[in-house]
Length: 79
Image (tube, rainbow, N blue to C red; front, side, top):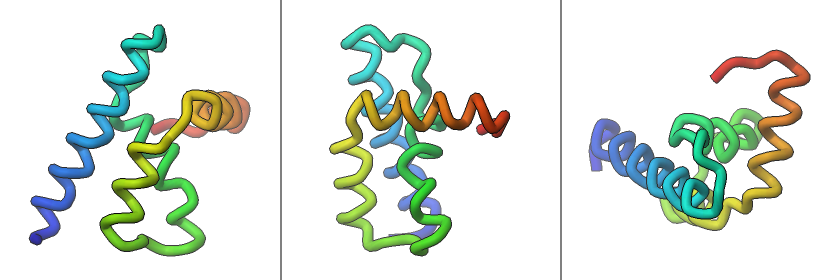
C-alpha cells in the first residue's frame, strides 16, 4: 500500500466517523478533527500498525472527542 493510498483510506475512515457523529447531533465535526484527536497519541508513541489506526478511528467515542476539542480550545491549537 502506498502512502497516498494509506492517506486516502484514513481520510475516508475519519470522514465516516465524522458522519457518524453528525447522526447523533454533532453536526460540525470534520474528518480532520477526528484525525487530530486520534493521532494525538501518535506524536509520542510513533505511528502504529494500520489495524491499530483503523481501530482507533472506528472506536473513537464522542466523550473522548469532546474532551480533546475542549482541551484544544483552551490551548488555542488549530487543526
